[in-house]
Amino acid sequence: MKVIGIDPGYAIIGYAIVDVEKNRRKLLKYGTIETSPKIEFPDRICKIYNEMNDVLKNFTPDFASIESLLFQNNQKTAIKVAEARGVIILSLKNFGVKIFELTPLQLKCSLTGYGKATKQQIILMTKKILNLKETIKTDDAADACALALSGSLFINNVN
Image (cartoon, rainbow, N blue to C red; front, side):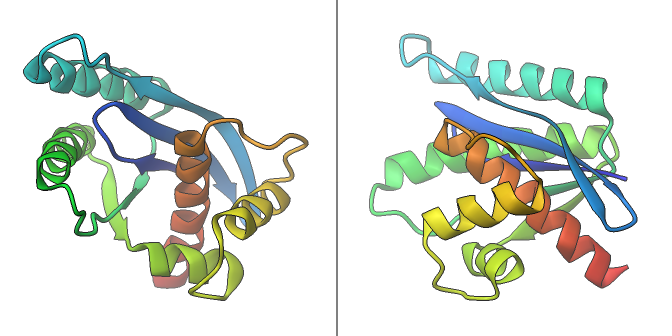
């Protein structure tokens, strides 16, 4: 079974694919989809959709774990992130991927057992469970790895 974790955004979208076999989890790929603020927003959304489709074609995940949105102070940014998240969800549904939405609390609890875990604790647990030698450099990709891993643990508990 393959799980894709997605950290939604519209400037930078993190993604990571984890392969799950019994109790073994292996990171297959991680990266980011980036859009330039120099292009119009509808073109940025289109780029996100097209690149997400490419990732899904190449890795054919069974499940997706995507972070649910929390209220942000900047409504304009929140709306744009929600729109980008919408095209990501559309892409996932078009590929038949079952979607789990995880709150930051669910993510933290599944990886550390503690709902107030720090970002550094999440990164350390993700690195340890996935047996990674190096820390993932970008925050968005690291968050996506944690989401994929957390999603794989969550899926095992509901199946």
